[in-house]
Image (cartoon, rainbow, N blue to C red):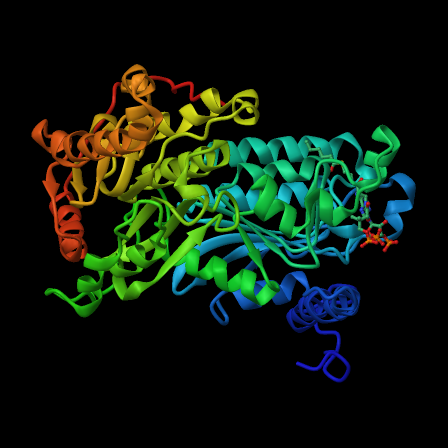
Length: 536
Ligand code: HXC
């Protein structure tokens, strides 16, 4: 229908519109939202290098699948002259759609309307669509681009942020929650994304911080930029607030679509299953694993080379890849089924566990456990990171999170030790003692309290000190080798059943797939309680 030419003649009784007029009126209202307001939004957003709220939805959702809700909702605020402008939608587009044919709910903040700020009606719309996601049992994707609490609406907007935080907490572990930061996200508005499971930010156009540069300067006198405070680099590499730093909005949406493909819709449904494309026999790529571990313990290798040889099509999606890169967390598929992978990365700080690595992996393990995603742990770890900075920042309390997370997990768990598994690192990286179902080791595994050099220096300190200096080096070398032979292989652990199988590296993919296959019906429950008290 063309609005200019097709206005119908009056149809009903005098003063009462007929059906054709009412349909015309609906079309005109829709036109106001979807064409006129969208044109205004497009001009404003594109000038800032950003897409509109609706363009983002179009890109994320399957074509034609988006169903908008509350399109005609409008604010009721009369303060500060607000009653002069009551645009439909009130600064946020909400509804449901499908992504790769699977249901999601979403909201997309519209910065072109009151800066995408949260007012009463905006809040009601977001809460309603979150409630819908919980009722349906599907993921919720929040697209954030907002100036925060709507200043004109005062405490009512704060109340809705708090309500949203409560919804996020109640939805945690029930439906996957994903936040996309596509513009500003400041003040208390950051806490809703922080509670959600995954947050993606876009280079150049997004930032998130509790207090912006002006407030920081007023309160502390320090001059900082928005990028330093909470730009995508800071958030993905330093603070860890963002799980992925996208190059642009298309990249961010791609990442979210890929992520959704790994996840179940809720904590009762299984993750989507894909066809098993893996080879049933040994492949050339498998055989390469027999040469992955360098002969010298001082040389390093890339743990992603192993991951790529275990998972279907060599494909995996890292979560938090730029944060604590000494610990890898990734989703992949094994025989067509989603698996969560937690792995030390020897290429970064020798794969040591520091505070960031512990918290990164703990949150990932808890997510996987909440959504019944089996966990594969690949260990090559020299232990927890020693040092004043780590102790003072709480490596005891914060390092404990990983032990807690594994101990609480009841999903199928398979662990492989490739090389070092020293001290606390052995215990925490999915050891049998924390509840792993199958523990595998390569013949190159060194499972011990500490590295051979360190152990010999502690155990033989007096004996070595008593030797003439000319003999000390050779004696230390001999004792180190003896220790390595006797105490630092996989076999003492295998004698006790702490390691179930010592396998040839080239058989890794096949053995891990078989282990997960055998665990498909695993059911384990822990004692009932209100909730635990993970060290925070
Ligand atoms: C009402 C707002 C707004 C807000 C922006 N606008 N933020 N309106 N409430 N919070 C409006 C602007 O008035 C402007 O309207 C339009 O949105 C675009 O804003 P600009 O400033 O022109 O855009 P830009 O230059 O890109 O700057 C974006 C910005 C800035 C950095 C976000 O707008 C800003 O600093 N806003 C205030 C942020 C803030 O302090 N929010 C409260 C945080 S406290 P016109 O009509 O001119 O186009 C909070 C508490 C939550 O959120 C508590 C939860 C527990």
